[in-house]
Length: 290
Image (tube, rainbow, N blue to C red; front, side, top):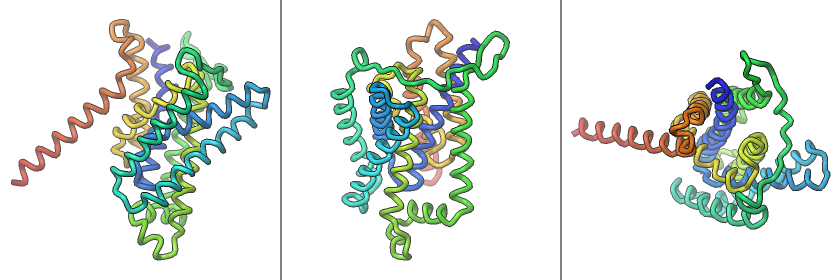
């Protein structure tokens, strides 16, 4: 059981990071980005393809992060240029289309679940400390620390810096922000690029545990959306907590033999329960407003 909890903490930190990327994209550029994990997977596979040729892993990681950032920036530029005045549903639909296209391209280039698994470097698999007889790997500390750093850092950036105020203006009133002199298009593309780079780093971090195939990694958007919903697409601390909780639930379900084979549906159950609960609240409010 304790082994499963530790494994759940490792996954929870990564899930929190993915959820934070979804929430940040929504808060800063008002888009639910369904293509985020596929973009990160593209960057991650650029990285592992370079390491397979003998390139230094850290240099390859830098190139992969740049590739992920460039691809995300391209998507952001398309949305800003051609869909800037459309509503959120249209922009989300565009990212769904991009997700489908990237998954098809990725599977074509890098193979499927059975033929395309790659061996990703795992620099944080070394033991950090032990709890009883259970070894806690460095990846647990790295993923959780990275998630906390982003949560605290972005909170301070948005609340206490001039750049943060500009980013909030961009998300809430993009046309007005541009009128008062804020370079909205460039700022929006920069946000997309940053999220693309972070997504690549997160995918590289989790890839050794999940088998390293493009299909599995690209589909992590399901988990990311579940975590973002736990944070109501707004709260960074709740998203962080939601990712850890989801990881623990997955770890515990892996330790129970009766439901072990169904642990992959945990994110979908979370999404369904949250949708039901929120629609229930809306129905209740409507009934009492009459």
